[in-house]
Image (cartoon, rainbow, N blue to C red; front, side, top):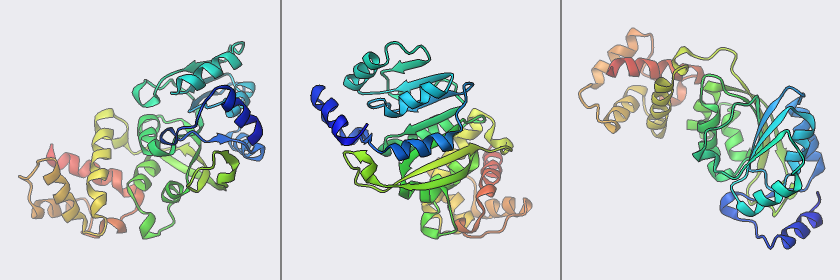
Length: 281
């Protein structure tokens, strides 16, 4: 659909897009084509779409796949989709908040996800031992952190967490003019694949939970030495009985030097979190 068609539908629905829900509707067919090309869709695929909107992407997905689970939190848009796609048996629509739901098992998540909850969606959907593939339209600033290129300013919590569960494959800049209304942020289309070999510490719910808490706890101190960052993390979780020299000794035992947090490689952080987990347990 083009801009005029989108505006006509919204007028008929007496609907005003909500910024807080990231309601920006795709009006560029070439972006839809790129999503299709990156997705490598097959009739065996089960797809999750988050924020189906007016169904522009949804329609392409259920035409090419086995089953599409489409979540739309807005009741007006949900009713529109329900009526529009009433005869499609391989589409299951949900008028629910994905963050408050149990996500259905799927092979791929293909979505223009709401930009304000990108981090929460990653944690809900992808941070588990068997994550799906992701083909996602996200904020370019977040994409730059995921596709980390050794720039200090881009090294962040989401850099480590996403790269610990997924391998970034492709990043394509997308013009805000591809949407109505135009978002005020720059966008990127990214493709992320599950890691072929997941760190053993990231295969259980309780240790994944600790890993995410550990990364969130040390990354505000990425310019500090790792021992200082761990000490501050431990204070934050009320583990004040473990002293700095004990942390240092334990790290050295596992062949880690007391370098700045930002100097460590991404693939070392699951191991570091496991070391700290064992230290306090």
